[in-house]
Image (tube, rainbow, N blue to C red):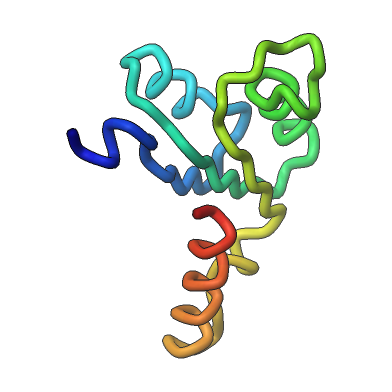
Length: 96
């Protein structure tokens, strides 16, 4: 079988809000291994974590998804293509 089917996909959720996109993927039964959540709004991030992250909300059943939180989109990208590539590689390594 395909390793993506076994392990799931890594999702980059830019401007993620409260996590409606991830909810849609879950309802479609798409297997997700990691979500990189990018959102500057602290309230939206709190709601997202409460709804989706069992390490944040211990009453929530663990769905096996690893969550990475970034509070500024600018942290994801660099000023030049070299910095951008290096930051993305570092983030990708952290996700996998």
